[in-house]
Length: 158
Image (cartoon, rainbow, N blue to C red):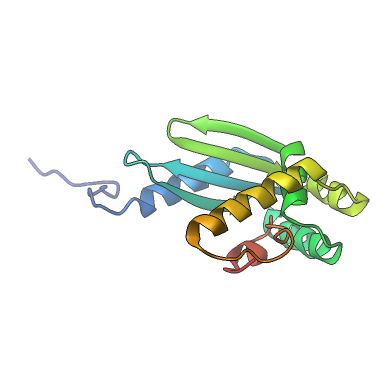
């Protein structure tokens, strides 16, 4: 009897990256064009890993939105507020998916939608508390717009 594999075999490893990457690609296939996906894989040990993905046309549109938001002086409070308005939350087992429709996000950025003073105050309290816990002095002001495009999200420092 001759047994020949007709498909690639999955070999168990300690590296979840290939499986996560395949899952992200499959998830992205189920969303409309011009969507930004923030996908969190929750691990059994309590850790988590975040992947970003964009559907067709989403990456360049996301970069354009980020440029517009930064030029308008939008900050993290604005990012949370606008994002909440246009985010679809779903889960698949231990995978949490936040899908942001980018055209409505862009419309809010261009029309000057801003986060509330309450949201800004919450963000500043969190930053102050984290800085105190770490024995650091927080930078003044609210952090910049967090990003919906690959160029800004790839930057390490806000």
